[in-house]
Amino acid sequence: MSVRILLALVFAASTLPGSVEAHGGGCRKSSPPGQCCHMDKKAGRVHCH
Image: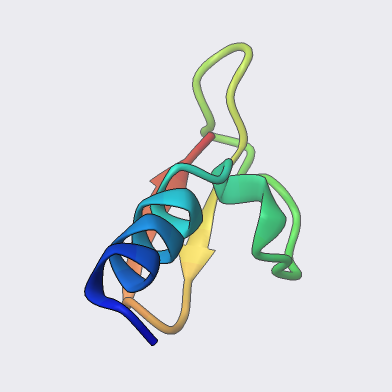
């Protein structure tokens, strides 16, 4: 595979919305208005979207 094609694939994958990666769990009650915060067990931290 050429380097250009590989770079194009990496770039395309990095620009996909974060919601493409499914994860379970609901929103924390302390989430800011309009956001859903929850624990990302893989990364070990809370993230919001």
